[in-house]
Length: 282
Image (cartoon, rainbow, N blue to C red; front, top):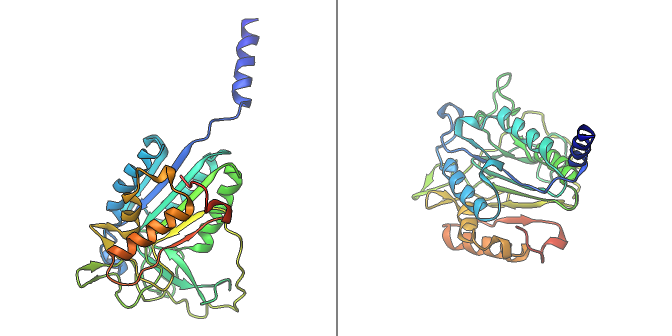
């Protein structure tokens, strides 16, 4: 009888819906290998700022995963994204944050109007194309990221939430990621061009199923401020209020803050399902 009772309790536990969890993957790269052609930035410093923000808003340390500098290789980022997908449960809140260099790379499937995908730059992804040695295979394109996010959405369901923050350049105006009059820029204006890689454009806009916050438009630079990304800084300024801000209010705060602290035009891009614009995001 006792054994049957214990087995029944175990069965009920296994079948009962699990409580929703707030999970996060925070990637920060500042000390890129000099051999890759990238300038040093402070993306790794953003990790501590972001973690403090998350802890203030309901995340637990054990559910916040970090990849810092040499840990944030292409394979490590892929593995952590796959892990996040595999452990995600219905109703979970998943926060993905990337602070590092960004670059545009030849669009090989024709879904970009300008012929270039936007890409995150892992620790081990060089800046320039070299036939037979590096042809962009470790650049994390927006197409690859979107594939992961669609799978995450299926896992967390409509009752879950996904927020993706990219504090990086997608392209720039010739600054090449170096200091410009004392300002540090994340990214390069040199596109990663794959010879013969362009295909006919077939741009299609798909409805977004998550909240996407980027530091700037694809053709703009992303400047650092006070030793961190300007977008990370803007989020940290309202870290204690995130739980009360609607999507529209958060967007306005980010744009106003970045406009006030960077030296040139930089327009953060905040995309989300229309129904979330008047609802609290965090």
